[in-house]
Amino acid sequence: MKTDTVAARGSGAVRRALEAELRAARARGVEQPAVVDVGGGSGGWAVPFASAGCLVTVVEPNPNALATLRRRAEEEGVSHRITVIADDSDALGAHVEAGSADLVLAHGLLEVVDDPAVALAALAAAVAPGGALSVLVANRNAAVLHRALAGRIAEAQRLLDGADGVVPGGRDTVLRRFDSTGLTALLVAAGLEVTLLQGDRVIADVVPGEVREDELAAFEVAAASVPALRDVAGRLHAMARPAQV
Image 1 (tube, rainbow, N blue to C red):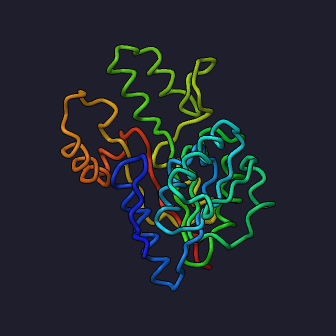
Image 2: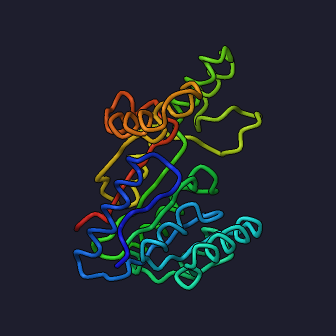
């Protein structure tokens, strides 16, 4: 039988939360949990989920990323468990049945969509009863802090002052960054209940290269849920469920 281990990019705290969702789905009697990975890229999460016995749908418009995904899935022998939808998040409702996904991933998505509220509405609609939405976003506070520590004070100030946590007219590759308060408010406004809010890559982006990997991994897991450290982590990770009415 397939295990629930999901070995993918991201800290152990994120993996631990996602693996808990697999166990919860199987406890509900779902033998092959349905996972929808929106903006799934080259399969950094999709392939491990498929290897763990899930049926995965990847919604991704980038043909180069999809080519890599297909190659990785073939190498791991899980192509039969992955359905590829070559489209963007706006088309999610046209391809994924409402209430059909035990777990929906939106990792690195809300930073780049035109309207995060619209995207979240579609993501929430795809979640099955008892299922969850996993959101991973760039953290505004981390971007400010890292630039300030690098001596780029003026840029840090613009990030701090900007409404969306980006440098106006700058070279940012994202449209917005979030803090924990703003992310929580956005999820709640979409009719979701936030059940977990933690940090990802709390220090991984700033520690010296000679640090031991096992020590770093253990620290990341321990620090992820400490509010003061979470709020300066490179990314914020939230798990949310459709609110009960």
